[in-house]
Image 1 (cartoon, rainbow, N blue to C red):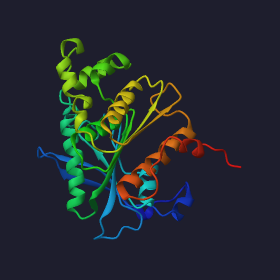
Image 2: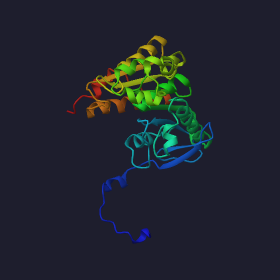
Image 3: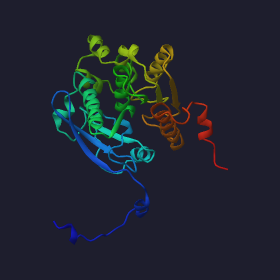
Image 4: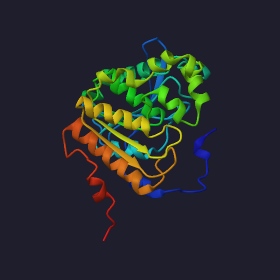
Length: 296
C-alpha cells in the first residue's frame, strides 16, 4: 500500500515532536552457541558516530516477554542523560519462536547470560559503547538476571536488582508460583532435586560479587518475596560490596505507589551516574525523604 495516500485521522501527543529523543533501532548479533539474538538499542540523544558512550543494559521481566520498538520512558530518560541503552531479548523471551523461549528450561541462566553479554560485545565492537562504563538493571526476571550477572562477571561498574531471586530453594516456599519454578529449573520436585535448584541460584556464587549493587523490592511481594533481596543485601554487606536496599510498602510484585516508583528511578540513575560515569553522588536511603518532599 502506498503510504502517500494515507489520511491522518488523529494527532496524539503532538508535543512529543518537540522533545529531544534518542533514536531506537532493532539490533541483532550472534550468541556463543551460534544462534541469533536480538533486542532494542536506544542511542544517546545527540549521538555522534565514532564516540563511545556509557551503556545501561535494561533487562525485561517474564522471562516470557519481549522488548519491541516503541516509546520507552526509561530508555529515553537514560538516552537524554547521555547513555546508550540496550534492551536484550535474551533466551527465554517471546517473539523469537518457541525454541528461543524454552531454551532456558533446565538451565535457567546460561544461554540468556551469554545472549546479554554477546550483545554488549557487539555494541563495543561497533564502536558505540565504552566497555569500561557499563551498568545493568532489571525487575522480576530482569532482577534474576541482574543477580546472575553480579555473581558471574565484573565487567559492569554498577547493578540495580529489582525483585530478583537469589536462592531458588528458599524462594520455592516463599513464592506463589511453585509450578512455574519447576518448569524453568528442569521440572524436578524441589525436595528431590536440591542440587538442581542450588546450582542455578545466584547465591551459590556470591563470593564472586564485586559490583556495587542497589536493591529494590516491595515488602509484601508475593511473586519474588522480599527475603530474597534481604539475602542479597546481607551477603553484599558481609563481603564489603557497596550496596543499598530500598524496601517499599505494599503487597504487589511491582511498586504500587507512583512516588515510590520515582524514588526507584531517581536512585537508580544516581547510582549509575556515580559508579558508571563517576559523576554526582551515589543515592543513599536518607535521600529518599528529600525526594518525597512535597512541593511548596
